[in-house]
Image 1 (cartoon, helix red, strand yellow):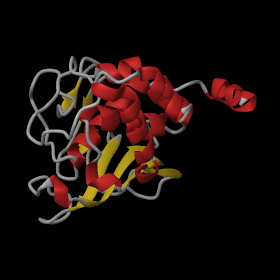
Image 2 (cartoon, helix red, strand yellow):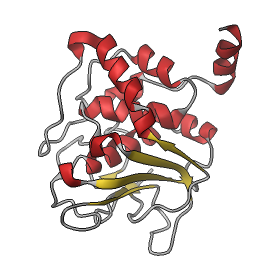
Image 3 (spheres, helix red, strand yellow):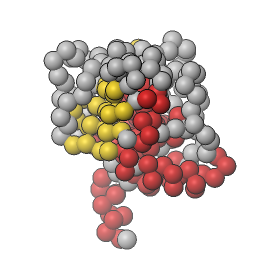
Length: 217
């Protein structure tokens, strides 16, 4: 598989640009309490805020209890990937005010291969990664419907789906593309070598299993 990215409105490309109306959306401000709770559960394993100028390799990962992450998000792959991304970077971008638009349609100006992109306002204008990340507002991560049309597709392609959310979250923390080997911010992915360990070790529960658990509570 060959996956490329653009950078202006930063994306896991297959392209880059502004997200449009999703079939469903998740405001990650609602997930922030989960991240805080998981951080407390992880105790000394949790760390502070992310650096703005370094990149993590595929080998880098946070020592988060994967089963706790999965239990918090249940079977929702978007919720879990969002939590995983914040744990990977040890930071929540945009003061937690992020909207993740799943199953988003492509719009005019996007390459047909675009499967993830971010948009935001900043002190230096729209989608300007030169601006301090602390000034980003109206932050949106869009995930393309053509690539992941439903939660089942997200679970099936979990490694790349999770990597995409980690990558786009990195942009919202001010990270540009990197040519460092194994970086989650690489402009081109030709295989799964860049998938961080936390994505590999944390997977959403099957929808059927989640329903069974909810009935037994």
